Structures are given as structure tokens and as C-alpha cells.
Image 1 (cartoon, rainbow, N blue to C red):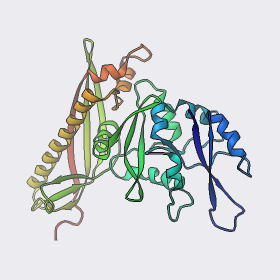
Image 2: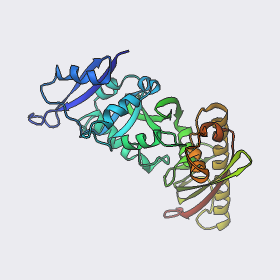
Image 3: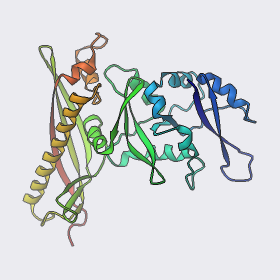
Image 4: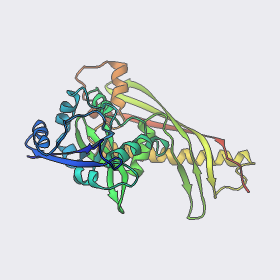
Length: 321
């Protein structure tokens, strides 16, 4: 096996703004790539300013424990650098030219930083957060998955890990539901759509609470999801801004739609997933005791999981016209 590690070097003395070069080193292990890199670099090897860490899907499925180990042992490494998994080779992503950015990694770091504005993404996809999740009982790391689509860099889903190994990729439609069930405090657009002309867009902030109980040897979880926010576009309901009954109708329909999608996702998780991607094991371990040798993935996939959804419209913008 050969490890290939691309690293961007910036030239501070250059006449051109943000001039840089991608140096790629191949070796039989990660440490040796640093030896090889210095053979083609005229500057000292220093880490600490990286904005993003890009791991290929092939490397992620092999396992990233060795990557984490060599980075964690370097005190100069930026613990807050954003982590992503990419399709294909990391060097192909890093060689992709992004206009008005000094390097692809800077663009990706900024892209991940602002994901939390929509699709109910959380704020933390950092190196340190991944280390904590991958080493904590009952927790499952996930990372944004990036690809080049129609000649543009784009987040196309989430990479799901079991400890340090990637086990599957989730498409964006499933990612939105997962984030509702797993995260707390995210924001995103939810839509009820009858056809191309009739639809309504709701932009809530999601709050998630989980209750855990145990009956015999079986765990039971109740996930309460509260969605509160404004209607940002309405092409479906008449008199939405004047008739409280219409608002109640919308809230009920949205509750039923979100609950249905959540229950479908939970069913797919139980049937097809190998891990507790909702991190319910961490909640059960906190209540009933840690370090007891419990296989939380097995326990959660065999447990009863109920979802309650509450929707509240707090604003309708300027109203109809």
C-alpha cells in the first residue's frame, strides 16, 4: 500500500498574491511522506495554518486512525481545521481551481464553516470534534462528503463512520432528516409541495430532546423535535397570514410530513445500517452507566424509537400581496 499526501505550500515572498504550490509525496507510511516531501520543497515543513483536511473515500474506508495519530502528535496542527471526505483522490480536489480563493482547502474550510445556515447541519466538523466522537462511547462520527459536480465543488452528502472507518455515504435528502434526528439547533428549509406552482417553504430552527427508558433488557427512546420559524414563501395556502385555522392546518401537515420522513429513516437505519448514527447509545450510557461492555450499535438498532414533531410558525414575513 502506498500513502499519497498532498500539501499546499504558500510563498509569502512572492510578488503574486496568495501564490502557492501543491506538493504531493508518496511513501509506504505517513511519516515517510514527510521525508519525500522535503526532497522537493525549498521551505521548512510547518503545519498550523491549514483550513481543511481532505480525506479520500478510499482512505476513509481503510480507516483514518493513523491520520489522526500523526496529526494529534504534532502540537502545531490546527485542531479547528474542518474535515471532509471526498470522492476520488484528495489531490484532484486540491488541484481544482477555485476563483478568488488562494487554495481549494481555504474554500472548503469556509464552505463547511457556513453549512450550519441550512439543511440543519451543526457547526462542528473539525479535526478535534472527529477525534472526540470517534473515541467516545455511544457516539458515531460523520463528515461532509464533497465532490466535483458539473465542474463545481459541492457537498453531496455525509460520510458515516464506525469509530475510525467510513462505512457508508448518505445522500442529501437523508442527511437533512438525519440532522433533524441527531443534531440540536440547526436551521433549514422544509417544503410542502403539491406541484411546480403550489408549494410552501418553512425556515425553522430545530430543537431536539431525547428521553430514554429501559423495559427489561430493551431500551426505548422518544425523540422530540420542535421546529419554530417563519414562512419564507407561500404559493399553496390561501389566507395564511389572516386565518389562524390555515396556519394550524399547515403546522399539522408539516408535522405529519416530517414525522413520516423521520420514521422512514429510522426504519432504514434499523434494517440496513451497522451503527447507531443517531448517537442514542451515548444518551443511554449516560443514564445507565458507561464502560459496561455494551455494544450500543446492536442495542440501539434493536430498540424502540418513537418520534414526536411539533411545528410552530412565528412569522410570515411581510404577508401576501
